[in-house]
Length: 558
Ligand code: CAO
Picture 1 (cartoon, rainbow, N blue to C red):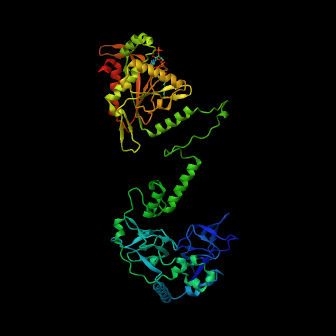
Picture 2 (tube, helix red, strand yellow):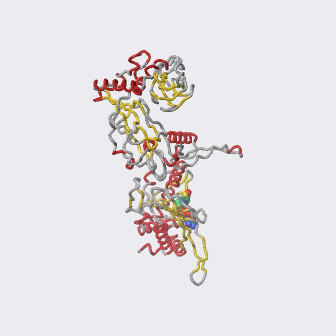
C-alpha cells in the first residue's frame, strides 16, 4: 500500500480553471483514468482522470474552487507496486505516507501540539453523538468534504437508524480536515467521523499554515490546496467527544409518512422551493438524495423552458402552435386591447375561482305584463324599459337579503370583505369586445332611473366612452343574453366579485299550477359563484329569493 498525491495536470495554457464537479468521494475505489473531478476554463471543460488505480483517501478541492496546474486534487492509496504509477505527482511523498501507524500517530501528535502551542489552529475529532439508544446506524449521506468551510451546526453527515435519520452537525465552525466515513458505513456512538480544524480566536487563516509536505517541498505544493491533504495525515489525538444530546436521534426525526429524506436534503428542498413528495427517490430504501433534488429541478427548468409547463402553477401544457393555413385560407389580425384584457381576466378567473353554477327559471309573466303596461309611460320619459332594470333591482334586493354574496375574498386568504353598498356590473357586448360598466347604488334607484342609466352605460360602452372608474367597484354582475337567445349558459365569475347572474331568453312554458298546465313566461337564470366565498346553501337562498322577487315585483316594495 502506498499513498499518492494527485495534482492538477497541465491545463493547456489556462492559468486557472473552476472545479465544476467532484465525481468521486472519499473511500471510493477508482481505476486508472476514472474521472476524479471536472474542471472548466473559459472555453472548455475537462475531466481530470486518476493517474492510477486506488482508493481515494482525501479530496482537497471543492466545487467552485479555482485551481491551477500543480494544485493538489486528492490523495489516493494504491496497491503496493503501484508507487511509480504517478511519475511526477504521486511519488513525491511515499516514504512519509508509509510511516508505520505508531510513527504516524506520533507525527500527528507532534504536529497537533505544535499547532496548539502556537494557539492558532486546533484540530478536533468529531465523533458519532449519542444515538438515543440505537446500537449502530447507517451513514446515508456525507454532506461535506475535506476542505469545506463549515459553520457551527452545519450538517457533516446524515445517519439513519431503523426509524429516523439525523444530521451530525459540526460542533464548531472550521474547516473539514477529513471525513473518515463513507456512505453505507455503519457507525456507533463515539465512532470517529472525521476531523475539523478551527482557528482559535480566529488568529490565522488556514492558508498561513503550510502543510507538512509543503514545508518540505514548497515548490510542489500550492499551500491552499495542500492544506486539506495535510490535514488527513496530521489528524491529531482525539479529544473526548462530548455526547451531543441536543442532536440525539429521537429528537431529530426527519422521516415523514410521505417522504424519506435526510435533513440536509430537506433543507435544500426548502431553499429551492421543491415539494419533496414530487421528487423521485433513488437512494437506499427510497430515500431522496441531493442528486435526486438536483435532477428534479433540472427537469422542471427544462420543461418550463420548452413550454411544457404552462402559466403559473396550473401545470397546463401550452397549446401547440398550429399553421391553420394548411387547412384552408386564413387571415390573422391583431386582438383589440379589450379582447386581450378580457381573455387574460377570463383565464385568470376561470383558473383561480372554484365555480359552481346553479340554475332556476323565474316566472316573469306578471313582470312582463307590468313592464309592457309601463312601456308607453317609459318612452314618454325617454327610457326603454327592458327586463334588465328589473333584473338589476331584483339582484340588488337579493344582495341585501343575502349579504353572503356581497363580499370579496381578501388577498391575504384570511379575511372576507363585506360591502355595505350595492353596485352592479352589467355585461355589454360591444364591437371591440366585452365591457362591464357598473351601475352604482342600484338598491337606492328606481326602475326608470336604472333603465336610463343602463341604456346610457351600454351606449357609452359601445361608443368607447367609458372611463376606468365606470367599470370599477361592482359587487355583482348581470350578464343578459336574453335579447340574443339561448336557453342557458354558465357565466364566469368576475373576480373579485363572488357571483354573477347569467340571464337567457325568456320563453313561454307549460307550468303545472296544481290543477292544470298553464302557459307562463319563464326566464332562465344561471347563478355562478365562487365556492370559496359562498356556500351552496347561500346560493340556493339567493337564487330562490331572486326568482320569487321577479315572480312578484311587489315584493321589491317590502
Ligand atoms: N328574454 C327575451 N327578450 C329579452 C330579454 C330576455 N331575457 N332581455 C331583453 N329582451 C328583449 C328586450 O325586451 C328588447 O325587446 P323590445 O325591444 O321588444 O323591448 C330586446 O330584447 C332588446 O333588448 P336590448 O338589448 O336593447 O336591451 P337589454 O336591456 O335587454 O340589454 C344589454 C342591454 C346592454 C345587457 C345588452 O344590449 C347586451 O349587450 N347584452 C349582451 C351581454 C353579453 O354580452 N353578455 C355575455 C357576457 S359573457 O360573454
